[in-house]
Image (tube, rainbow, N blue to C red; front, side, top):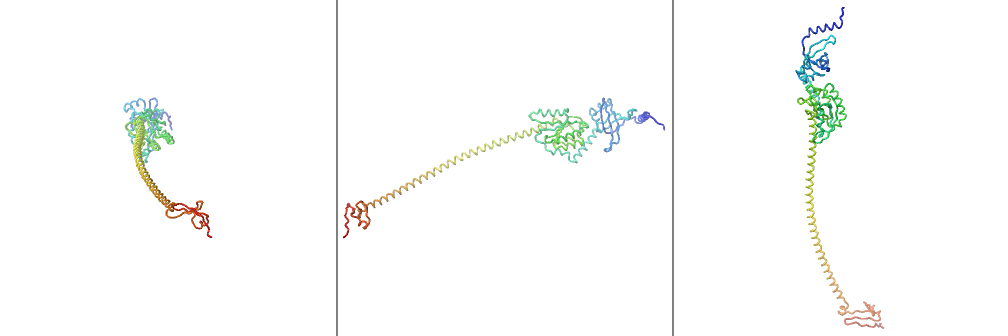
Length: 410
């Protein structure tokens, strides 16, 4: 059997390819790897059936063709050339004896990639809706005051700087405590980094009032990572309300849809938070004014009640004093009357006693024909027995007294 060397085989393959693949072809595929060196893009393209890779090919986009594509489609065309993007590329098959087979890219269909992203976005929305994850974060109440903020962003992102500046320079003097959880805001590593950072935030969720996701501007393709199902599923597990400011003025990302509150830009997020805190501050001021008004009204009512009570008390006291004076006067009159009656009674009694005494006066008795018998030493004798014992007696009669000798009977 005659053998050929590798170089001869490669030359034969190259000749076959040149003869059979002289035209350019539009190829649908997915970029699995992408790198840019010296202005050239080096890609690995794959084709899948379901989750299985059924074809792999190397591809290159030379700098000269890249300039033409950007001129034709704008700077957004370069965003297509990233890993995991589905693309429609205009290629020519090229074989190099030393480096083997590769596809040389001459053009691309931007609308195909955008359309594919829209289809994937819709699928993501449907999956999240079916599991209830799309509304889960909206059920977490947003605090009336948002001051402790966990931020998912990149410190170099213009949107992050705008957000922090807006918060710090608010005209009301509100203070905020922000904690940055650094993540890339585009590219292949967004999902892994967001998942890692969200776990860190959930562990410390009592330290925060809300999670803010901001980046600040970009094309549809730049923002496509925020439509990824895995990323949105991870965010839906947050125990804190999420506020987004992805930064696209027209399109709403799926991340915006699953968040508690979405704003167009990072600056708008800061304004939303400031205004929310302002509303609560105004509510407190209004409440304070209402309390003061109620206190003043209550004070006036109490003052009026006190004045009325004072007047009533004075009136009652006056009436009571008048009544007591009347009672006292009546009692005084009663005492005087009773006293006078008593005095009159005593006078009558004394008069009666005087009359009785006068009636019983010895002289009065003598005037009525009676006699008073006494001993010689002025002791009255009331019986014959007592008289018989005396040697002499004195007999008092109306017209005088006479002493008599007592002679015993013989």
